[in-house]
Image (cartoon, rainbow, N blue to C red):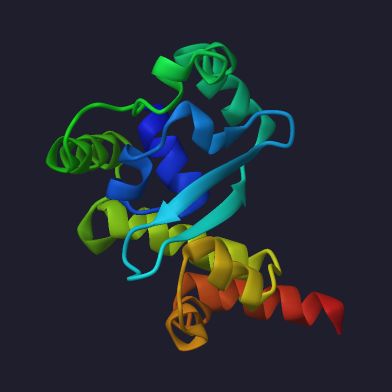
Length: 160
C-alpha cells in the first residue's frame, strides 16, 4: 500500500518509485528525490511528502537506519517488478471502486498533476515535480474538463 501512496503523492512513474532507496529520502525536510527515467540526461527532482507518509515509510523500511549503513543505503525499497507494481495499483483501484482509464498508474500521475494545479502550485514547479523537460507537456494537466473544470469555476466565482 505504501508503494501506491508514494505514487499518488509524488506523481512519479512506477519504475521511478521502484528505483527509490533509503538515500532517496530526506526525512527531516520531508522530501523524496526521484530520478527521472524518461530523460536522456540524468535529472533528479525533489518532491515534498506529507509528514504522515514520511513517518509510515520510516516505520516500514527503517530509512534512518539504512541511511547509516552503506550496504543498505543504496538497496531498492521495493524489490518487485514493474508489472507486479502495475497489478498492485490495479488491485488497489478496484478495491477503491475506481474503474476505467483512471484506474492505472498514469491515472495516479494525472491525479497528482491536476490536484497540484488545482491547489495553485505554479506550473513551473509542477513541471519540475513531474520531471517534464517541456512546459507544454505539463500544460496538459492544466487542461481540465468535467468535474475538475466545475470545481475550478466554483473556486473562481468564490473569489469574485
